[in-house]
Image 1 (tube, protein in one colour):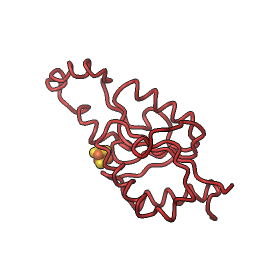
Image 2 (tube, rainbow, N blue to C red; image 1 turned 90 degrees about the vertical axis):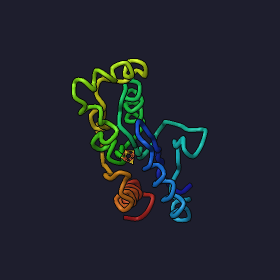
Image 3 (cartoon, rainbow, N blue to C red; image 1 turned 45 degrees about the horizontal axis):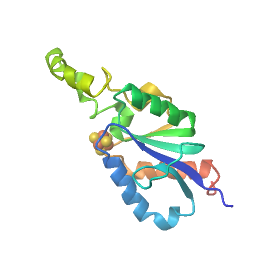
Image 4 (cartoon, rainbow, N blue to C red; image 1 turned 30 degrees about the vertical axis):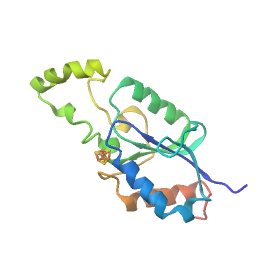
Length: 161
Ligand code: SF4
């Protein structure tokens, strides 16, 4: 059987616009990628998802609570590479605006953090786990994403280098 790149797409706290960009890129590149990608995990595309033996995990969004940090560590454990996708994952903003609130505003939102079990600080992906690459932009820059996809298709021997 031909080797495929086993990928996962994961979204944490964010508006998920990079997911929309990814879906559009999947449409545009369908005939190029359909025999090259094995989509193991992408809740936006399918119901049955497996977090195991993933070559490249694409992670969008900021990490705002301990439960998500735990999930992210599990993604790291089951993935050979992790790519932070979009500004919220890469540098924590704009999803992490509350980190910059003054004391008064922080006091005002305190009850929400408790109600929704949120951590005191919003973290970017690399605050929680080591990452291998990142695609900046809000939403992510398409050309940069295509470059990363091409790089890993070659690195994992799916297409010729
Ligand atoms: S980086 Fe921008 S587009 Fe992506 S999730 Fe954050 S706010 Fe949305």
